[in-house]
Image 1 (spheres, rainbow over the protein chains, first blue to last red):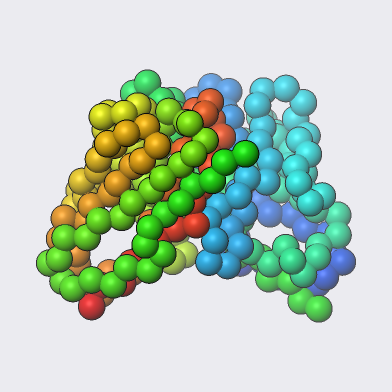
Image 2: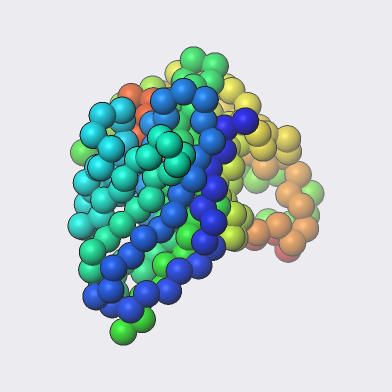
Length: 115
Length: 111
């Protein structure tokens, strides 16, 4: 069955440090993959999306992610974390179903940024 | 640009009560979704609708009803609220069936 796994429920980094949030997917075929961010008491906002093509995709606010078919992964990276990046990050894969598409979400990673 | 509006922002109900959540979008998107978000968990799909008057059940549809009265609105009803239930309900819509746009959520507390 299609699924998304985010193995790290919580990640803590210092401001200015680099960041990697991990995402593994299970999907038959070529996936469409997404990273969403949820700031406190807000809805989800799209950070970046992967449609088949260049494996490295750029997103907003300096985020990027790399698709790896061999590793079934879509890890999120940022070179230098800012305090405003404190949020929950969700990885998702798009799944075709009954004439439309659904998003299958991972359980999320809470990012804490230390001063 | 567009926006998704969810009402109310906070909903407090009693056990056994029927509760309705509303979602409006002005993107002119065809497909709309309702998700439930529990603390520490990802989003789980309750219902979705690919057009006006269409309803499709997600994995978590038991205990809920939905209604797509018109293209811009999608309502969700909790048919019998469960005591101590706490969750955030998120509405979303999509143009191209890939990228979804989310509303700010409705926080439900059942006393």
